[in-house]
Length: 80
Image (cartoon, rainbow, N blue to C red; front, side):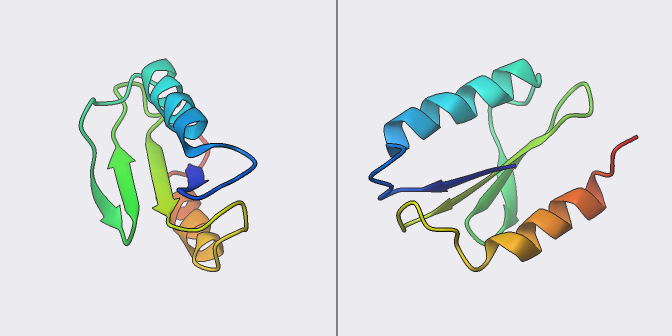
């Protein structure tokens, strides 16, 4: 799961986009994602390592919605 702020002054969003692309490529994810939750996109993986991106309009701060989304992700994708 990757959380990103579009206005992040410390970790530029353009850098984060490159990282999210790398995460999807390394995890053999589909090129196109699907809506998963508010502001989230789910990218299924052929090897069971999906990627979810949560992109919010804020900066480097931890978005208040993030904890619940992280819990949801790990409940749906527990370690095997």
